[in-house]
Length: 240
Image 1 (tube, rainbow, N blue to C red):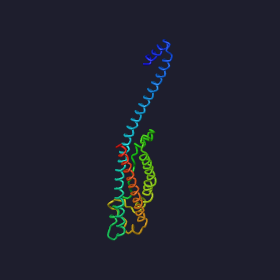
Image 2: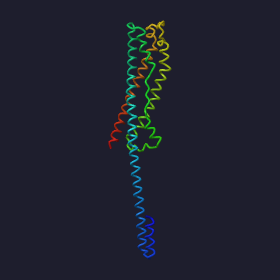
Image 3: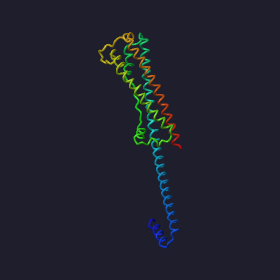
Image 4: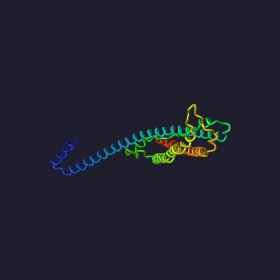
């Protein structure tokens, strides 16, 4: 094609048709510019198509990760409810200790040195950040909610989950060990139930742990609500 245009220009020069030569040259330049603009536009369309496909892919992955989190929130909430019920049962036994045995109390206490942990699934979000492609999610509401969601989960992990672990390890665990509830020997004679009642440490430990579990439960439900809200926004974006 280039040789064809060059031959035309050479023929015009040889025939001394300078005016036509310049007009033709200008026309050729315009055609080249138009060709470049068309090529750039096609390239832009291709990039937009790639970004749209990438956006769809990541939105689906983000939704999947959030749905994993929602299931985990449900599991953690169920576990915490059971722990709270164990504490309520233990407190009931202590308040009505004349009608119960030490073993009745111990069967509840042995579960209370544990706590449910929540670990978020943020693989898709971290991949977006590492690839520098967070901007392909061009819905500001989604990106802002995602940043806030994962930031709050991290803050809660540091303030609540790790605090609960430290409490179990440093306070509640030693309190229970003091009352030898772990001994399962057939010849072991457990401490009388009144010993638990007279010592405020075990009662206060149970009350404090219940408060912590209730707070953890509320935080958990709030984060679950946030995850559900983001999933709704993603569904709306995927329909566009």
